[in-house]
Image (tube, rainbow, N blue to C red; front, side):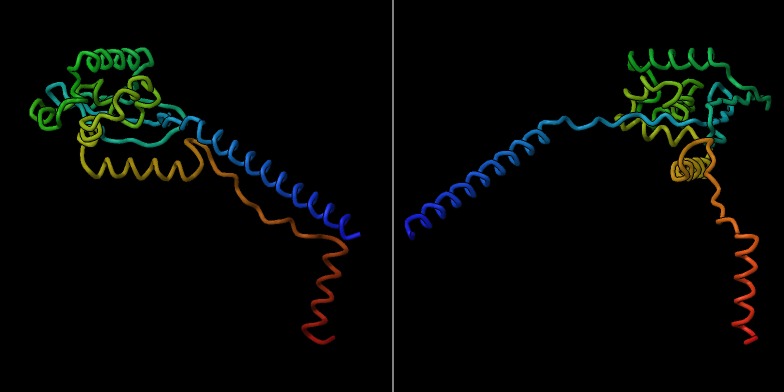
Length: 213
């Protein structure tokens, strides 16, 4: 009898050890599989924006207003104060011009900010690519510029004042927190009140409890 009990105990121990080994091997395989997965690369945010750019003679430009919007628009105010919206063809042309300068190493966007300031500031194409609309109108070029330290510093300089830059950053931050650009939140409404028999019955019972009638 004792011999049979010992055999059964031995089989139970062996079965438990086998299950433990299988679980351990499965866990190791899962961790290796997770470790082998490549990390996701950061992507350029394509955010809609309405950007107003003002011309400052001689041939330099500043961002004077910038707000989130459902569609991207670029408004140009010339030296005479006249405003017009740039066409998509004009925007595409500006992006290509600036891309060629970046490839040739002559773009002011990648130059030291001190040199850009001495030269009077950015041209129209550079100012456009320094705005919040850059990710939408020229995402390919933005991928080349995002890790450039001079570009990040020059972006701030393209705004008319630190207040304009701060206001722009704040408005886009609120838009992201609000769930998108040009979209509205769904309004929350309270549950409809009950009407009819159940409503009147509830009112009558509550009036009795208050006045003791």
